[in-house]
Length: 230
Image (cartoon, rainbow, N blue to C red; front, side, top):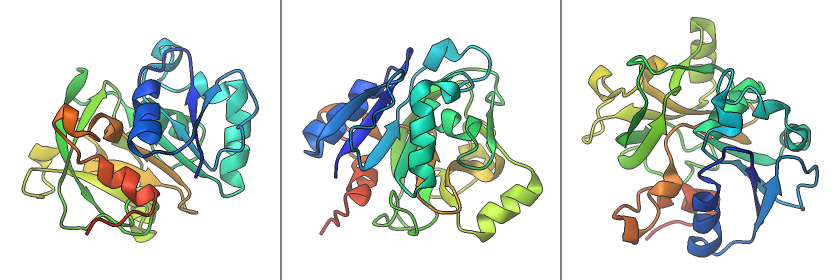
């Protein structure tokens, strides 16, 4: 599998993502500059975290119109795998590729800390090998991560099994106290109806090596690659 990581002006997690895919997962990675239109035959596209275009207007609102996004959207509409992390998730919702929107955190403050997640489904490429009993400790770093959708949309994504992750406490309890940003129903990640486009606010690439003291994020990359731990 060949990955393509899109780099926007203001991306700051692109090299982190590339390092995990290339050096930790041993997969080829193409760096895709936002002004390009060639996806370089990538099989899986990643929109990384950061502050694309300085987060002017709404986060992700300008990046959504970058030249390369026309190709990324067409790729996703053809069934290609696409993942957005943090700012990448914000770009996905701005492009209408996944349901919902991301609002300012209910604290009105930027939040950078470890949080806990539980997978809500095995019916996605990023969660297919993650047990529903597993509790993942993954960092967040965002000011606009408050996931919002109207009640009919929330019902639809729950009915369609499109919720990928929910914030929980370290014991796996999904509670209001474990919700770091006010997200509806503690939602931390969702996918589209076709299940090939996924978005999540936490940063698995920041928790994928022993050298950083946390390898919980590897579960997501191993799931993408079809690796089942013994």
